[in-house]
Image (cartoon, rainbow, N blue to C red):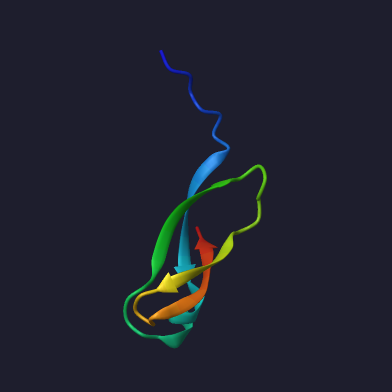
Length: 62
């Protein structure tokens, strides 16, 4: 049988902050993984928003 993972790597959702503040319909979200032991705080990355057609800051949501 395969060994079970310890559970340090978790799946997180990143949501565009600029799009959320603009009030336009739709959302830009990305799914990624992070190691919660090394980065316990919320992630923040610059990702492409196809609705706004530019690179914006995406923050981790719960």
